[in-house]
Amino acid sequence: MTEQTKPAKKKEKGGMTEFETGLIGSLISGLEGSVYFEVGCRNGASFAIFGRSMPPGSLLLGVDMPGGPWGMVGSETHLEKVADTLRLDYRVELLYRDSQKPETLAEVKTVLDGQPVDALLLDADHSRAGVVSDLEMYSPLVRPGGIVIFHDCGFLGSPLCLEKEYKLEQVEHINTIHHIFASFCYRRKYVLVQDFVGMGAVWM
Image (cartoon, rainbow, N blue to C red; front, side, top):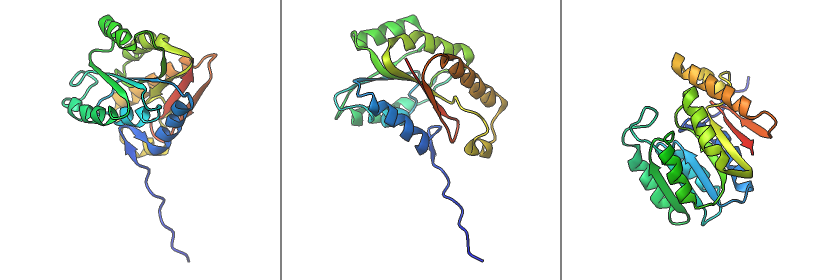
């Protein structure tokens, strides 16, 4: 009888796995764009990974509200360290604002200065109203052929999901984002990448 080893456990960081970020990152790099915009940066894990998928010299723009209802107290300390490292190769702009406020949209447009967004990641407020608000406010900034990326938009039956004991409200949030993602996909090209809570990309 031969000894069988268990497969290595998948690494999960910031609610994402290497499988998920690798495939989404390849989509971003394939755009050959110059503007990456992330709503809901927290400690900068996805901001660093996907920012590095852009060509050097690109604009990396982030909006986050540390300590807010969907933020993390003190997360800006680590996010600023990530931003400082990225600034060696990129133009980085961080706005610590409520993404749903009209004045935040105005500031975002000022930073963009007429440039269209190539890749937009939505990972802030996970309530239905919050996701819809961010989607309606910021997706029009994405150029034709660019992509809108959703986090936590997968099915709850994936292997890593089944290993976790989710609270009811977490289950509801993932299901909500999945349905919003599915609706936004209508008549658009899209991909859903998942071995944890899932990431989806929709072409504009």
